[in-house]
Image (cartoon, rainbow, N blue to C red; front, side, top):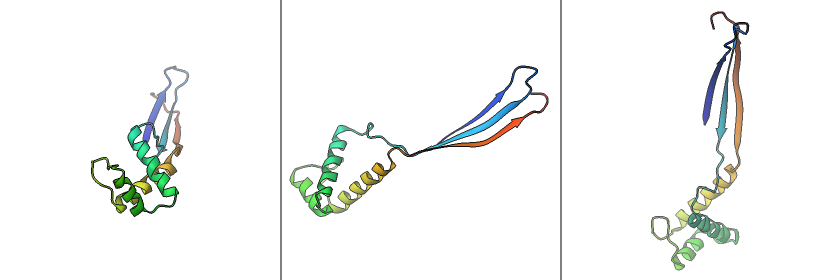
Length: 113
């Protein structure tokens, strides 16, 4: 989350006021641009097999039979397949999510600015 607080004083003597406001930007917006092509390819394989109806154990067996290893070079097991697919699904749901809120706005008309 990024928060910006802005104070904008007027430098002109006949405009003796300042406006203070805050803008809060909350984003869980994600992108597939920062993910390596190998991981994108693995995602496509995992999601594709899952959409064809294979369960986690069958997907793990398929990946191991085709010598497709995890990022750390280990064999797949069904819990890891399930967690990985679940993370990709959650990531897909968060794509494009952004909230912008204008916080408190105040105008100070006091002397000596």
